Amino acid sequence: MPSKKIEVTCPRCKKIFLRNPHDIQKTEKTYGEWKCWLCSRKTRKQKTEKPIGFKRLHKQRQRILIKTESGWKDEHRFEMEKYLGRELEKDEIVHHIDGNSFNNKIENLELMLHNKHTIYHHTGKKRSKKTKYNISKSKRGKSISQKLTFNDVLNIRKSHCINKNSYSELAYKYNVSKGMIGHIIRKEAWR
Image 1 (tube, rainbow, N blue to C red):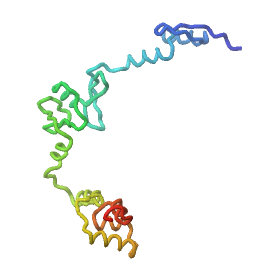
Image 2 (image 1 turned 90 degrees about the horizontal axis):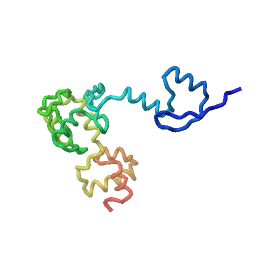
Image 3 (image 1 turned 90 degrees about the vertical axis):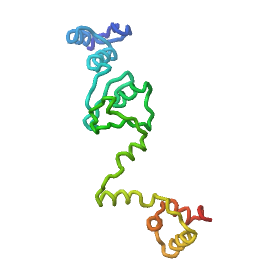
């Protein structure tokens, strides 16, 4: 027959619980005192929690993270925010001048906009034929820099209706998106 439950008060949060006396005795014997589940969890978390200013290495991203009041941040962004006295915007990048992502001294950090940072790292790069092909492949059908002439539009409609060319084939041939081909054929564009 199960034993009767007794009322127990948590010493931290002062809430009252109904618990089995055997469970309370077992917990007191192991941990010294009984606490409710939430309070014991908070105690365990406090023992393992890192203090503010603690640094750790993020191996996958090859970055040093620092514990702040608002959580973990990249150390180079934290240093730049401290130097500027404000939080960084989403499109602002902190560039390491010497290329060493572990050298987070303020003399080695430079603030850039995202687009300028991309241009900086890609200007003058030599790429293999395979990489060039993959870049051009990813841009195929997306670029609308080539303007279509009226004759091109007539040819697109004609080749779709008569020759039964697919949207993909026409988009590749005229270097426009499949959506644009659809608009032309349905006469939503170039009426």
